[in-house]
Image (cartoon, rainbow, N blue to C red):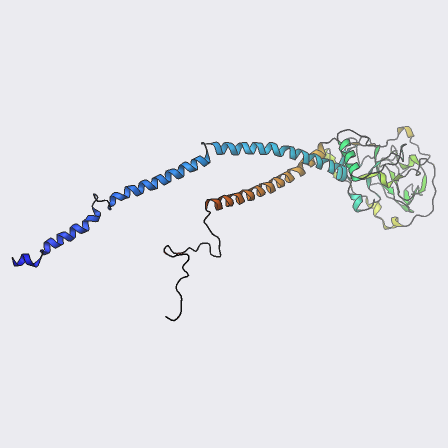
Length: 391
């Protein structure tokens, strides 16, 4: 009786505690681990919804790849006309204002230039420096050696139109010739001295480096002061060259106007075995040549070569292959550059749209000086917080 009055035995108390501790781990209770499958199911449901949303955004399998490939194909065909247009414009610009190829049909400039040689003519050089003695120049013979008005270049738009037409065989290119410059405006050019040499301002020229082997400097006598704005030109194959000596009865006394010069021939590009630069011979670098002209006069020639047998080295513009090739060479980097710029702009716009969509998905997000800082979960936004001061 006394034991019963004192309360439960220690063993019973321990059993009760053990029963109480085991209760949360009992799988049969509602608060035990039986709740874990429900949480897992919820996570799996969320993952399934996310996968379905991603699949809906991605579309059917392979659609993204096909779309990208189609986009690339469309992009290529959209870029191709741009490439062709840029190449064509560049080709006309290069041919009209910079460099043009010409074909040599005769031997009046042998052996410097042979029949069927292709030469490149620089059209920019005389915008940066004056014509020099010894230059091999390409010029239009209309109005000087041939009847007709003296050619004029016109404005840049007219030049572009003429260049476009001539590249494809239209228009009138003129009587294009090629010769070497012997006398500049104001020079006194004469032939011959006691040794049979051509003189310029009294200085004899040593022409053996470029004259056709066996040719004399000239078999025609002449004595002329080159008028202002004109040039005295001669071929390197003097026996067969139709040049200034044979047109002394024409306007200008056989000289040609500087305005008729198309450009300077500076390199042979074809055939490959003939490739070479066309420099100014050393004899034209003599300082005494720059002396002022002394006296004037002109004499008729009594050369041995018959006029009917002379060659004028009339040039024919080469085909459009070279300017078009140069045009495509210049168009490729320009097309690539404008494409890169356009792609970058498109990416920036897409990034801006993506940021806008991100803001639309999170409308409650606020910007501030510390956008990552958040209030505590139990704090009232209207509560100013504890006040500091004396109690």
